[in-house]
Length: 135
Image 1 (tube, rainbow, N blue to C red):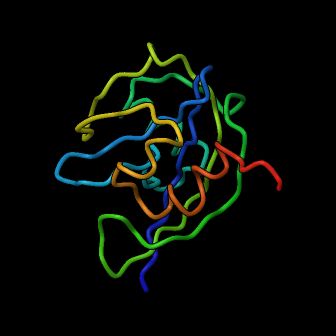
Image 2 (image 1 turned 30 degrees about the horizontal axis):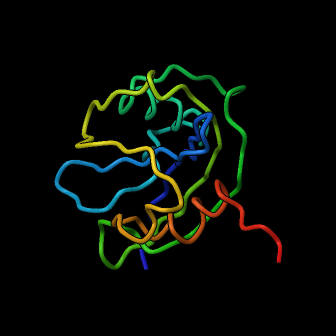
């Protein structure tokens, strides 16, 4: 299965909501981020993508590495996505839809049942944002 390498952000606000975005022409919401350009590190890719897509100005000190995660690609059937994920927090008022984005939403765990989400978000990234209490 061909791999798509991306950098993705788990962005949480002060209320514990997580930012997800939907690109134009797609139906599923996912973590913001994108594919690297030649020579970019995963963090550099994410910083550039968050600026292009959301107008955010971050630097590497703002990002906390979460690891590498693999899932089926949301919008490219037959592919899988290999994501370097980072966590950060931002003020919701500092985020605006730009570039190829159609919309953004700040979601809570209650939205999981109703919102169409990318496999990477459901399987890996949102559980990192909202850890389940140990039972």
